[in-house]
Image (cartoon, rainbow, N blue to C red; front, top):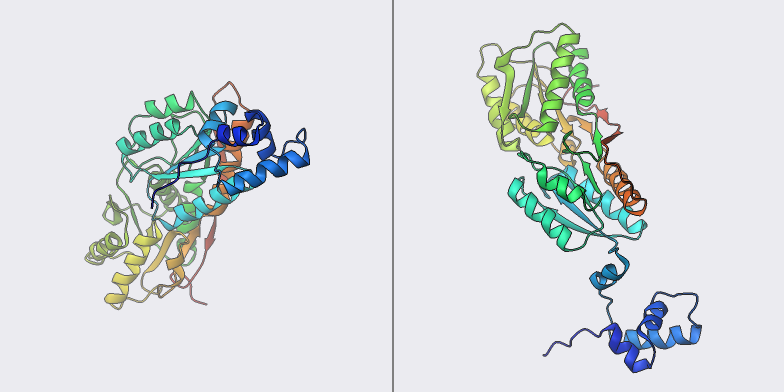
Length: 341
């Protein structure tokens, strides 16, 4: 079956013996166009399966009403909750969304930013890839269109940044362990270079210092892939020590669940012998046994907030580029992995 070419606005106008501008305004329900003309245009457009060319209309109006979103990894639970908030808020405010994944690759991230510009997006929401070293390309995009960062951000980029207080959230998680009587608390974090991981590590260190607990390098473990498999492996390393920890703080739920699986395998009582805390409040945190105590990150709220700020900057452009940090509150969800009622 041969595909029919898309009917253009010009062809509709010719068939109706009307000007292109009249047909365009009729399709957009302009008050200056009579009801009779609107009906004629709408009926022919429907019969012809007319679909407006968003890029052409964007070129004419200098607006596409499309937002670009670039995230490091689409499969992460936390990312999906953010994207849901972005999509909901964008739709409410009359914008479409193009979503892309950098796969934590700086080169891919640069390609995606270039593609977003080519697609004519009005603005970009960006969560940095883990190993972003140069921000020059991002600054060039920012000089052309509004850009708002979220989750994984950089203080080298002067824009609105929507984040949680990573350090404070980690501090509260570790302090909770201390308040339950734990004194030898291990951490499983990412290798250097991750903004989020370093902030959570700072919160961990601050909690130990404020409660006069020793900092032992033997129980500070780093891994590039902070996954369930690595969490299980890191737990095995900690269990092999002569002096085991009595609690483990993993900076992701995936790693924390891997830890619990390892502890369950060796029949170590959680939380009596070793307590476990994660970070994210993923769907899996309630499925694992015992259920996981974790920091709840309100992803949906983060997504909606950064979308509101971006659209405001699109519709109310400002000349000066400044760094503005918008902080979203978190809370610790206490479950069986640290405290049994």
